[in-house]
Image 1 (cartoon, helix red, strand yellow):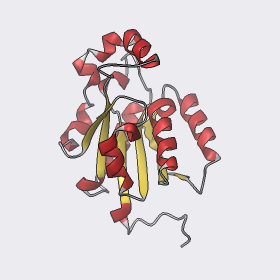
Image 2 (tube, rainbow, N blue to C red):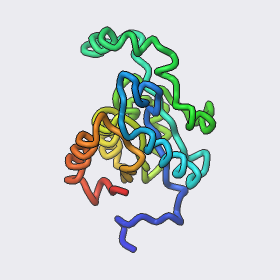
Image 3 (cartoon, one colour):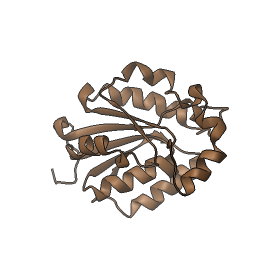
Length: 184
């Protein structure tokens, strides 16, 4: 087996990263991601394949004191930012959340959270799932690659604003495959 192949027997260096699976992305919500229900089901299956201490969940929360364009972002999205239900995690994944595996972030990439960055840095391969493909997932993937991590992009566990945008993200990332990223 070459160094680019996936070896499911060596999970100790693997991390399952679940990005921002919050209610605001559910059907009929302001930031609907049409494939989110399928992604949730897929993520639930993947969770069972990883040791509990090798699963991380992230949640987007707005900056308390935003700078630059984030000020505008908070103004435009104030109604969503202040709605606790929309910002809450989807019900199906809540049973898996613990204090030790749940991190908040205030940027698109979860790698900007210093504590989470240190946690991620202790793993070699990062299996990526979550929303939104063209925003938080894409920003995180680029940061993971810059960290020197092998990214396993679990396309069934990722939802975007549309199937077209999901496919566009994969087209962008194809140039980084197979050295930096593997699609599953």
